[in-house]
Image 1 (cartoon, rainbow, N blue to C red):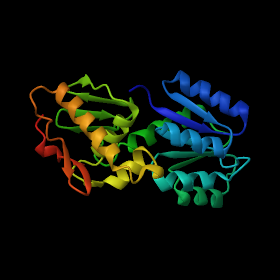
Image 2 (tube, one colour):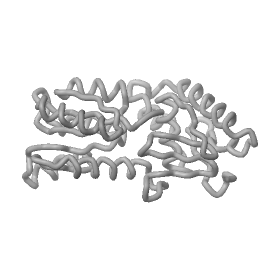
Image 3 (cartoon, rainbow, N blue to C red):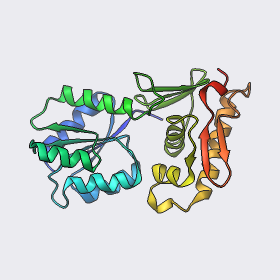
Length: 237
């Protein structure tokens, strides 16, 4: 896995290009869209780590994009809009946005807000840096990296997303439906074989990275329901 992926949804081309250039220069991989339809296609296909969203899009109000994303996932959404009335902020936040920055804005503040949202996206198990550690396994959400005993684990995007969802909630049972929606989207809710294949791959890669076998029981299956990560105190360091 590489750097965090951010989707910029902004219909003003000059603003969008400036954001793409600035964020790319600061270590992010950036996707872009100038309208809601393109944004939803690119979000569904690439599942970025965070969305920066303008509300005034030509084909749909931005709150509709928020609602559509929230049907499937908890992907952080930062609204970047010229609408600075309190009612607009409340509407966007109640629709599911995580933060709101009014235009005009400073790119330094924007990057700080993005970094804070990415840290929070690691879930309640994360430390102040946005890192989750379960035994010898560490998820660094800001760097988009999983390590085992300090060695980087080579994962595909879907493998990373699947492990991220589970590691962010150690000890918590996550249903098959929720995992499928979070990683692949609502169209795959009934594709349970996807989980079987990808969980098997994850287990093999984790085992290969830890020949001692101490992470063998990290991913626990609950037959017919879903999966969970073993509670941290039950996974040896």
